[in-house]
Length: 339
Image 1 (cartoon, rainbow, N blue to C red):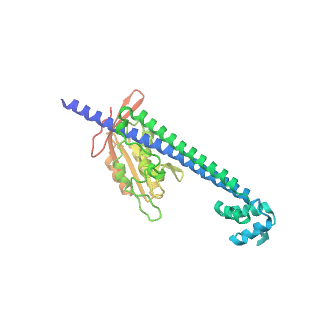
Image 2: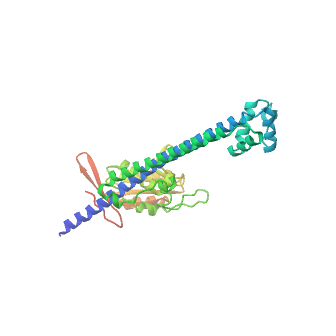
Image 3: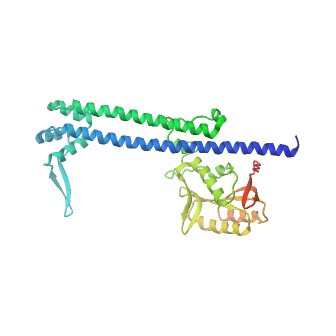
């Protein structure tokens, strides 16, 4: 095998690995999207349970007379008055409306406590309780079926995304996952503003291996998705800084500005931006894609570091095909050629 064939083989293997990683990221993003749908469904389910339970309590309590309701309030410590502010002073008014008092009692007692009240006063509650529990059982089954349907939907997406390789990819089980784990918060230490801890973002950036990019916007999108997967909800794109916007921010402490070193003017602009950003962030990181242009990049790196910025440099080449451009990515530890 010739050296050229060897390089092509390495390049093909690298591209295949990157393609696999990109598909795995899409799979995880789909799982997160579906998990959010399930979380919304669970929230609506709990809200409906609370509403139905309140209705059941009201239906039972409505059979009591006013004096009986007041006796229940006295026994259970439920207030029988409401407060209002009149001319800046708090005043109490005794509740004399039965419907209003029923609402207060229903809000303070559980369904089980209301059932005990019904037994004590020998009023009918069995039919109401049976009806509620039957509905609750059916609603639970419907929620369970919805979750199973969503798991099947995710499994089908996995099969379509990976094809014959789907058997080699670990299946994401939605029931055992949380939103936090799918957002990638378990991959690193949680960014905690209260105790001041933060992940080593520079190390994470050095592990970043983008796919083919055409311009800075494309590179920014890929880096944002990569950091979002690693750091979760703290990552924000196009974060406002005064009358400007930095490419990516992590919380309100770390700002990241991206530049492709195609010209000196771009690097000069980067220095000017960093000069502004260091006033807003605890740490500013400049991510530069060195494409081999004669721009004296080392002098700009020194200027950025003198301003207090961290600098992460990826090396690469720009390839133009008609109106489109492709960039071949390399870094200090690996050589990644994408053709």
